Length: 258
Image (tube, rainbow, N blue to C red; front, side, top):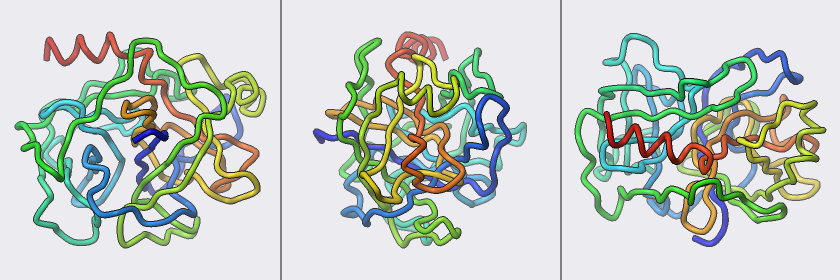
């Protein structure tokens, strides 16, 4: 795929932040349903059988997600579902795993969402096929240029009123210059973040629950959904992603030693 892609998912509720005014965890608002199983690297992190966060399969036993998708001590209550299009019912293509270990980035700051990245080790290796495939990591310290066109996808709220879709949804987005994004977000944006806004004068993007999903550009994962504006798809506030390329060395170290 030659555009950017983000896989996004629903978390009910919001998190309090002090560095900027009231961002929410995002869900897809606007957009259209994608062709079933056309994003085979997508993962659904679930708790008690309910969708919690998105993620990306980068190795047969490893899923990349956001650090704010915090796993509590009761790991057996969590699971990862791969190969899904609709999360409302089981599909023959789905593979379900428990989580052996959660490895958040050690310098993650829950108050500012700096370093919002986490790796999940599955209890066994995924079977790679037409429905389940690996995503490619970016080159170390690579960056997306402003105005790069993106696509954001997820199973989250499609209206801002907790209305869930029948299948995976998608909408478009464009990368915003980090400097202007930082002004909008009142100094909360760092070099380890990527900002993306929806189509001009439209209400599309992520908001009240969309977390951990990947932002893709030219076949490589470049970002992880971190936070967004209080109003779903508000064009004044770009959606914010953790910039994966700055964490490649850490990711490779975890994959090698865990």
